[in-house]
Amino acid sequence: MRLSFSEALLLPGVAEEMLLPEFWTARFRDIELEAGWIEPNSSPPINLAVASYLETVRRQSGALYNGDGTALAPERVLEGCDWWERYEYGLLTKTADLKLLPRDAPFFSTKGEPDLDRNQLSGLDPGDALLICGGSPDRAWFGVVSDAGTGWVKRDNIGIGSRNEILGFQNAGRKLTAIDPNPVIRMEDGVIGVSMGSSFPSDDERRRLALVPGRDSSGYLKFKTGLVTGGEFRDHLPRTAHHLIWQAFKYLGCRYAWGDHDLEGYGRDCSRLVRDVLRSIGFKPPRNSQEQLAAGKKRTVLTGMDLARRMIRLKTVSPGSLLFTSDHVMFFLGEYQGEFYAIHGCYNFRRKAENKEERVKVKQVVVSGLSLGSGTESGSLLERLTAVIEV
View 1 (cartoon, helix red, strand yellow):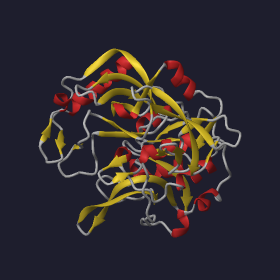
View 2 (cartoon, helix red, strand yellow):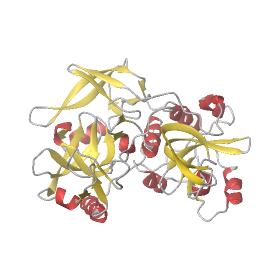
View 3 (tube, rainbow, N blue to C red):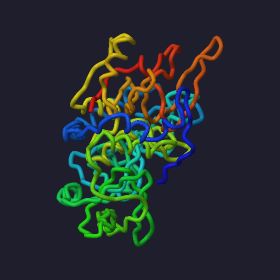
View 4 (cartoon, rainbow, N blue to C red):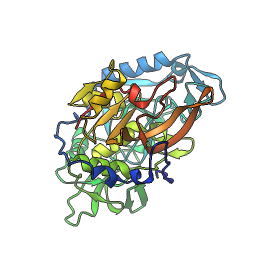
């Protein structure tokens, strides 16, 4: 896995100097975030997770399409899949995709949106823990419950271990945390890519060697030692608003990809950007935006406020806070010359064009004003805000 970056887009109302984190951090005094600012992610009991997953699949029946435009019956794909009464523990040994259904082929909620593969739930990283609770008829996929959700992962990407092995890896006292967006670890048999916020046990005084999960020929865990060579690895960064913003700006120009991976390659969507950044400063947030909102300690609801009240309320919100719409999340950067700004993974926005509206694809991590989309039927980002998690 390697994330793609390009020159950051200048959206309407954004000047070049606004693409520097220092432009924003110089405008406010740093704030230390409480350890419980975002509650750690916790997976539901397996039986509830699987039941919720099956209900999600059932609800989407009749509303999904294959790449050729034909209707997809997701329940048919699951025929013959087993859900086990007893589960196994595992760790990811390489970058993998969490899929809604046990198949590689994408599918879509509309016939004309090939970018948004609804089979792609999330990317997963080496070291991510899984509860393995099912299998596909061809034995190529495991049904899993993970921090990123419930779905299917190719079994060749998983090392099965004991509960004590997985907990020992997760709760190791000394760890190296990846601080940059494209970190790599060199192994004897090659290089593996991980993500910002990924952590690995390390007893090396030089802080260069890390314990990395692998798998033996039978599919069981076999830990290996790797050399951290690409990007910075260290203890997690201090939990401050300045560090949060600096980390978010490391993704500026990173391509957007729904579920971290699409037909064009790897990228970050809005909530994965938030997750990576927060993990690099010591938090363990959920993967998806509405779960992130529910995990926030200092939530303020904006639903029902008119535009004037929203603007008054945002003037009291500190930079680094999280802004939410019904389907999006952003890092708040603050106010400048009467406009409010955020950095976020943006797929597209709508704008007025003569007597009609047009959709503008962005597909990038960008800085934008919250007036983006103003005057359109769906409204501006500011008008669509539903809640804030304040730092």
